[in-house]
Amino acid sequence: MKKRPLYIAAAAVGLIIVGLVLYFFLNPPAKVYSNDVQVRAVVTYFGDELSQVRLNDTKENIAKNIDARYALYVRPDLLDAWKANPATAPGRTEDVWPDRMEIQKIDKQSDGTYLVEAWVITKEKDYSPTAPTTWFPVMLTVAQGPDGWQITNYELIS
Image (tube, rainbow, N blue to C red; front, side, top):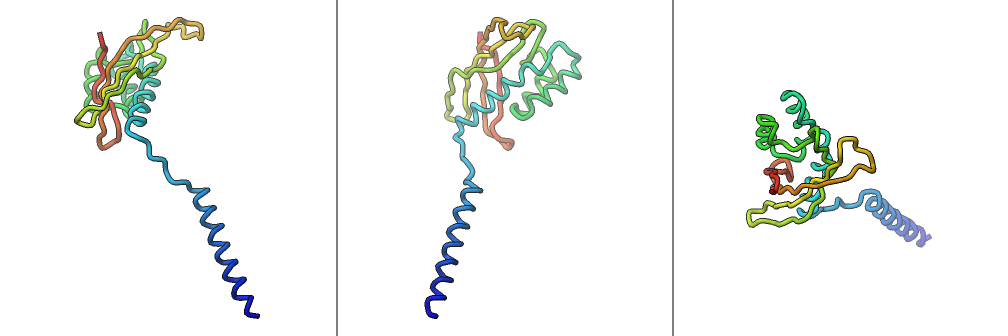
């Protein structure tokens, strides 16, 4: 009868091991992404929203669209500047339909911000799959703040 406590102890250890394996299998540790990956994501997702902001609308509608589409990716002070002067905001016009952004270069600055050179890839307004594409270069500054990584500056490169 001395073997019975040994079996109970072995079964308990086995259950603990199975429980730990299941716990870590079902709850893997969160992935920690590098700043570079996060900055790329902000710029890429922002670029995906550009075609959704129509700049040939009323100032009120442009402001609503800027808030709805860009607020996750752009700092509030830059959003406010674009809403005050929509001509300086990126987005869709009658002639330019942004499709996406393609990052060309990312440089980390000494102050912890990132300068991102990108191309805004555009299509003609019929937006057909065969429509020719064009592009224009932009420079973005991305900084980490209380709401995560966000764009603090956006300018066309001439």
